[in-house]
Image (tube, rainbow, N blue to C red):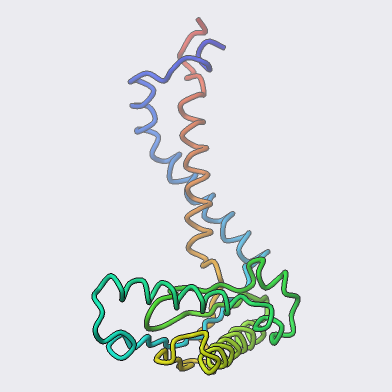
Length: 203
């Protein structure tokens, strides 16, 4: 019992380093289990649509300094992010809004240039359709707000990718292999450090 609660000694760490076969076996077992989990309960597919956003700083604020440019970008970006997640936009996707906001949709890189609209679904075609519809609905809504004067008139948007979208699993197989390997390497380390050697005596 004293062996289990005492701090590892230098000899224990040397023994741990020598048990390389145990490390390799633990890593292989972890990878096999990680792969089994991946194929037994695969993560959903993730599709990505892209909208190019151009704030046209030179036209919108031709005489202003960098600080004013920053505030302009921050203000207009915040408005458009709110529109992307608005009830009016999400209602066009014909999907429960609480699920869409609960992780089914993701918005990445909300700044100038490409905005990424991601959608997750077990069916890759459904994920593609959802991501494309979200990007299209977003652009339409922003254009309406530009005409209404709520978004700067010089902001330009274009859906650059809404068909044949990139689709892949939301979590790659490599992540499952790494997680499984890491967990079992940790368990193997504890097993070596806290298992009493055969030739040791109980204090």
